[in-house]
Length: 328
Image 1 (cartoon, rainbow, N blue to C red):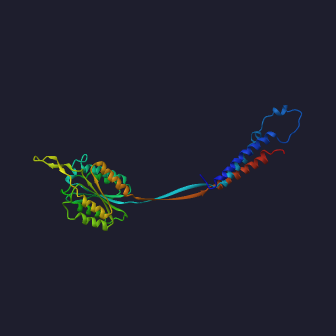
Image 2 (image 1 turned 180 degrees about the horizontal axis):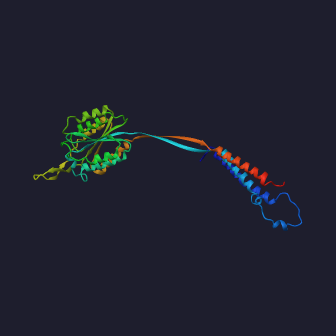
Image 3 (image 1 turned 60 degrees about the vertical axis):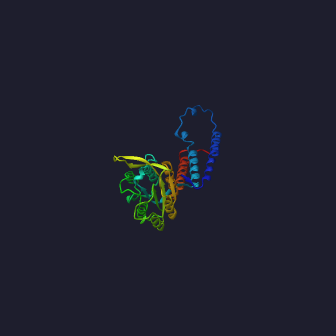
């Protein structure tokens, strides 16, 4: 319960001197009647009036307290809040070429990328997120959706070898742009992750970047791969998968240009922890806008307290004049 004028509640302190005066006056006594002996009176049974003799004062004090509370204007406060979220549409475009199975990340680049992306998706509650995969060509793994359960399931199903091998960065970016083309969101973002140099595809990476910039889509590019040499998968003469040390080659210049042209940023991840830090940084840069509007409504309760005070005074008056009438 809320009080409009809580300072008036200090008037309740007057109950202390009121009670002290009543006790003093009671002990002092009222009118006296002289009799020769009280022996008979002392043995007389006590009536109901004797036990109720202090009730009028109690009722009067309670009425005073109710009046003070009514003057302080008690109110019931109801709080109504309206939350509006302006989400961001995000497409994760992930390279699934054979080189993403390189084991300079544990257990490999693709698995590490999927695990970090899963954590990123879990943190983007309320945003629409889509998935695009690319190698020698590209396709949509998941359209934009807020259904995190479905997203996590489809993300887990991503693996290398789904499509023709190669690295078509332009196609991967163009497919992601196409997912965002009809989006009404004020903020549209593509996070493109790759570990190589574009060597396939019908669309040049920088041409796709121009399209993204024209449509107001920010592109964050991530190059994954350790510095120097890394163990890449290869097939030996017996048809078995083996790993050979090869030089890590990432077209960082093109990735930087794509990010610069679209207002995004380029990041380089040399291990899983750095990749996690990159996604965390993007998560901070791309915050969803949440507005909370609060409305407070007040309901006056003083009338109930005032009526209670009147009822107590009426009861005190009836008791004093009818049942407990005293001789002056």
